[in-house]
Length: 582
Image (cartoon, rainbow, N blue to C red; front, side, top):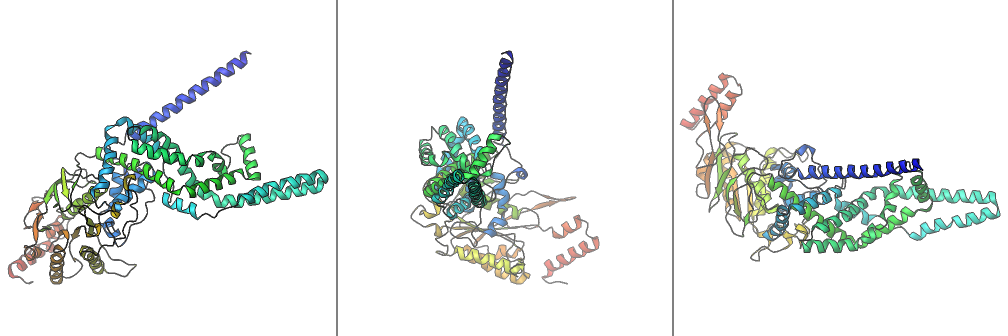
């Protein structure tokens, strides 16, 4: 009796100890998850989800591959990504790749972000539930759902018939044991062959089921947390109710993965599943529910994605020293105060107001021209994607955003650097012409913020379609792949033509001649430097054209022979004085 009491006490202690260990692990996980709030996380340890592809060339308001590469938007994505689920990661990519063309979806998204920011208890309830959902794997969730739809149907009658074959085999065994044994082994072999053949086909699809089940399980926790957001709670509650049959008994189908331990009972159940196909039957039942409730699953994904994106935006905002919500109004001139690049922790803030003229920036090498263009471009995208700008104030319209900056030779297509340049510029010119933007560019924007239709499918304020939204373009060193005379002549005409379209143009150049040629339609700005023992850059945007140059001085600073640099300075001075080369 004493032994029984001792064993009982030990079991109770083990249970209590296990409970406290689990509680400590949950608390440690929560602290780790909440520690990301307000901190810049290391991009090296972030998981990059499979995010899909960009439209190329860009249609509608989409960001094309050239602009994405020019602006290093993958790095920007990593910086602002605090999501915990594949659905949230995909949504973040979607809103960056397809910035909203009206303020309504941004405002709806921001309302949820604000709620999570102000209600810390709600935030702390949602984050662990989202983390439990996690990621799907190497494919997007949309691809997984599509694969489930493509999977051929299987008749339940066939599996039931295979199970019923055991009955005549057993009956034959009662009449003729030897024949019965042979018949029984034949039926077992037939069932095992069918089982393993089907299992090999179905195994890759278990990841889809597992992700949906995690969403349903976490959805119940999220539903409880959303008591103060009835519209979200009611939507998730309705979705969960429709998917209750999917999750009921789902462990049977998930057991296709095999016994997870050496427990004799688990092994016995595994053999029974092989012989009687209970897990296959449940799998196909769940598959049928997936097909019938596909829209419900997508609705649930949209709700989870909206929550994950909102908490991610809240975390990103908390990590910024200065940020603002953009003031986006149709026809509003672009005006920015103290804007910084989100990837630069020690960036110098600059301000600009774009009036009737476009923007032409000159300056020496490494003075900050390209960085400023990228700063404005990236923040313009984030303004229309997540309603968050690294600046004190941001006013402007909703733009279709293009760039032509970090181009290079295309070996696969055989295009030279110059050909790559002019093709990139041509796409911007085409997009700037009224009515040239495609009205089919809505891929990847379904149900922004989990409500309504795609922002790109809605008319912009004032009744205009998004295809007539203004272009915001950024061009660095126009036509630098050709000779000086033709470059200045052609680039001047291109910039003049582009500035006359429905576009806001930011251009940077080393060709000072363009500041005079375009003075009537471009406002001149410049970056400069101080030359002491070394070159010191202020990275401050200043009005007017540049009056300094430093290319030869930089050659000297990195150790080029003095014979070369002195002669180069003399040659440059002669040309500037006489207008010809000696």
